[in-house]
Image 1 (spheres, one colour):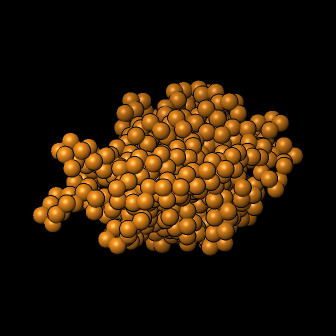
Image 2: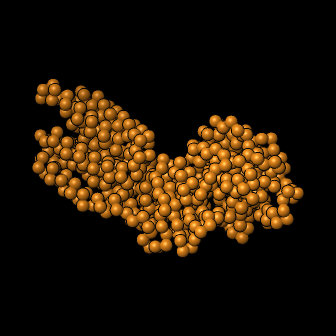
Image 3: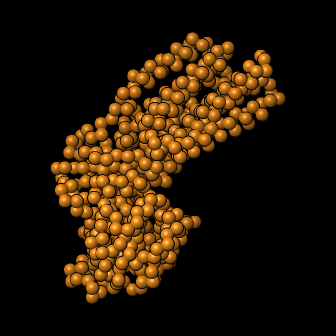
Length: 515
């Protein structure tokens, strides 16, 4: 073999492991986007995807090493072709796999569905490394260099794939389309690998197998791409808006017969209104009507977690200028176009912990409405985060926080932890339950540097009765102080997440959680 042919062979091998390394990370990251609408974007989903990725790659390294030493007819091209085909199958089998694993519950269901969906393709991609090392090694003296180079190039490919996916592909292309592109890209790569392996394998046999896989993939393609946007088992629901953003699957769903419209982020409902008149249908938000009377001289507010914008619109009716902070531009767009949200203050798009450090305004009221029935953004509910909010308040200002949980006679550990954490920052607080007749509920905390007077003269008699009926006492001894260092809130809320998911499934059906 001449110097140039040897160099060229090594370059194509490096290119191959670079591309397959990128494919591994694309599949891993996309995995959470397919699972999240069904099981939520929780720590359990991320743990499942990362664990399955490591399991599949470990198996791939082991099996690939064995086959590289003993196989005479099964080469790198066949491995890459199979990985591409299995990748193409993922969006096609996602729905039946998720439906099959649903009875297993949140944690086990997320893990088993991830295991079934992504192990085949990731295992095959894990086999690429040992085969590539075998092809690159000409003597025992160079095996260390060859192995190090192969895995270094593969890791660089993973880094580039991660950056390219997160910074470019996600904002431009849907998850299903990216899966299809990766699958076909790997099939094309397998043809190139077959050509360069022609002296080691039976080329006609390998090409026949790759072509068969490609034809099968093309036959399946219409079934992968054509998905009805309406719920098959309930024609009353209609998808009015759908966008896959950097942060999740945002959609607006109508039930015309029952006259309600939902704004959803993955498996969470973050806004609800009547279709006919646009009235807010989330009961806990009624507390906003009492805030102008509870907080003297309320003029300026900040709403973190805009959702459909109903809280900001209610405050606007009282002449209160409200800035809104929403992490997802797709949510902001849906609120404007489908819930008639018209901001009275600035609209800020970004993550709260970052953006509140940059705010220059001071507020009489800050509403933190991000703890819905779905995944918990736990970084927004720590002593450090609450202190950041406190720094934005005027001297007599208040923080209002909505939180979804079970009541459990005031002894729920998650509720107690919220109360105990707020108490580390604010000397005064009250806790209200949205619907006193239900165990699973929204809870509204009002925390301030001054006493919160539910008998304030500005309150109407009806408002006093309404507040007193909902006033609850929480046993803080059942909770812990939540910090950036230690925040087990998500694990404390596992039962809540599972119950909320079942409640939403009963309301709109499982199919609305499958992308």
